[in-house]
Image 1 (tube, rainbow, N blue to C red):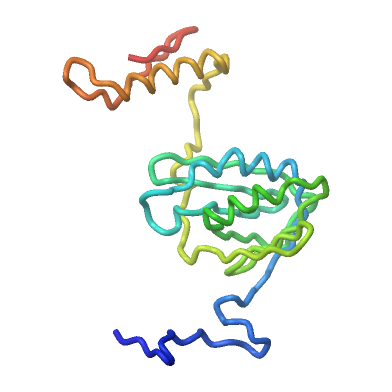
Image 2: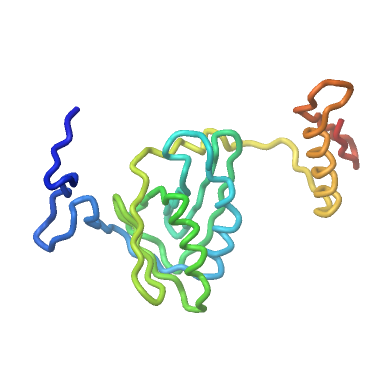
Length: 201
């Protein structure tokens, strides 16, 4: 592989007539109007599941997907998965999906301080947000995995638990996973369900 350089600098990418590099061209397909508070809550529910240390390129971002009048956010690091959906003011003409990079998601969280509805445009390679100014984020050029295959379609049992009690139980289980007991590393915890009880071993 060879790289041509001129005056000690690598060559710039080709530009269009407006002087914008071709990799920055924006191809927008869908305009969305979203309630700002709902979108903020959706990001808070999902962004921390994005891969940060290892994984394929598509996992280092947040999938935004339109489905009729729903906007869905999906994040996974390959071992755990979370998705959340909010309802938009009107259904879209066609469904779109784009993977927003990790750093762009962090910037989006900082843009959600105003009270007005958020205007967002999705494209084949870009996301544009209008919030005081116009912000454009390039998408990840990799196919996000089919998360529907990891979500159960039929559930035979539903668990209802007190939030605070369940949180304390999970914290205790997490401590068990991080200690050494009788010179053996404890890496897994078994949870048992019975009538009116849930316990971890």
